[in-house]
Length: 333
Ligand code: GLU
Image (tube, rainbow, N blue to C red; front, side, top):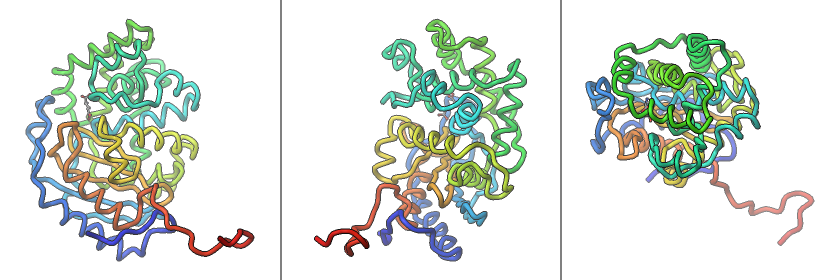
């Protein structure tokens, strides 16, 4: 058990963070639990042993251990950043009204969740809400929307992100369920654009290639009020970051979001290729990659490593120390 710190204050010095990232990697590496996603055929080909842990501090400091430079498809983690881009373009209220923020308690690709909620997509981190969010992106055509996503997610990462065409083709050939979800949303008047074109853009956004280091930098941009700590460029506003992190806290880890928040205490988002991003507001982004998943679709080692770092670095946003001295002007007990 590692020492517990609270979330107030700042990160420890660079060398201590570096050592704790190595500790987290060693701690989680022992687990071989979970299974690689195979419902997208290309994902089943990946080496299940790959594992990397990266931290990007908001001042630009980078830490990484293991396979932090190996590229994999971002999958559902794209939902967080596309949501931020759409909030930036349309504003808090318009997106909250159209998409919602509440957890469905059901699987990410649930059709029943749409039916139970009269066609409301519920939140942008399940497929229905993500497809509806992508449909809201400004742009006269699907091609322009795709370019806006690629440029926007690249700005979050601080480097140009490329499409993994093998993963894209593999998912495009097998994503009947997402097409059905888009058609169902159309039937409820929740998508105005061509539903199959929207699913195509969504499938591309999920097939963008990232590394664990990219995820850490993307998370750090959200932690830093929207400014990329490496490029120094503003990507979205601080208000958009706040809204995005609230949505991630409630919905980022699928129907296990409550457990994640209880154990780890950070907004985060996982994807079925094995990535997880976690965000410590004002401090850092954490990116992990390990392809073996729990039954909900969350990387097992990624969860373990992030939990270790959250405890060791005092990142849990709900943890506080008791104030034992009366504050100046306050009343003594
Ligand atoms: N592209 C995947 C899908 O729509 C993303 C799922 C995920 O990462 O949760 O099924």
